[in-house]
Image (cartoon, rainbow, N blue to C red; front, side, top):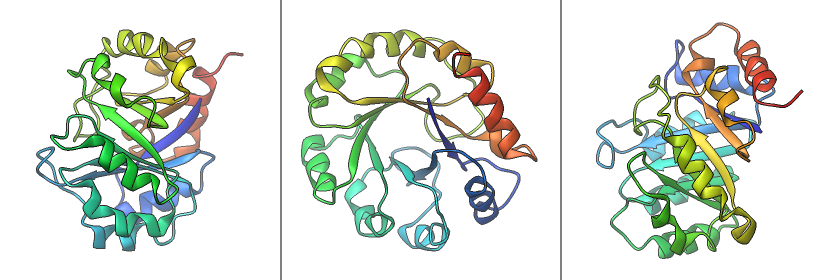
Amino acid sequence: MKISVSFLKSNNTYADTIKLINDTSCDYLHVDIMDGLFVPQKNFTPQDLESLLSKNNKPLDIHLMVNSPLDYLDTLTKFHPEYITIHLELEQNIKEIIAKIKKYNIKVGLSIKPETNISKLLPYLSDIDLVLIMAVNPGLGGQSFIPETLNKIKELNKYKDKYYFKTSVDGGINDITISKLLDLNIDIIVSGSYITTQDNYQNQINKLKKNGNHN
């Protein structure tokens, strides 16, 4: 289980938080981008991202909670992210957006909100590299893990052998909830405030690794 760390909620500045994340053994920097339209909150413009990500040294796992994902591509592709994830709930041509991202040789993820049924992913599973299941409502850090998420993961796992996508879970992940994900074939967990509101990021990551892997 790989660990992707979000800096959406932190006790430090964004820049300092990214530096602290870079100094840990985590696998990805998870970048949550919100436009104030798809979700009520707004954080980074493309210009903000240019500055924030310029000194990052971790592989990027980017989560676009925005109405116009393609508006961010010119900026984001400069940083060669491993994943760019968009939301299934966009009222747009999802397949067209996926194809445009893939032209940049970037892996594409599709995320679903807690209320969205797994069946709505089926038309896209052959086109994507990652499914990001939200275990909280997108937009705010520090929320509690929604237990129903576990059933959604089990349902999604029925399709993994056929379509070869990876599964990521985001929201409310800590040293307790991660143990519930054992045996559910999760590839990446996204954890934010559990790590970034503490003084020792590496210590928190070590707890996740200990509880998220079989001994």
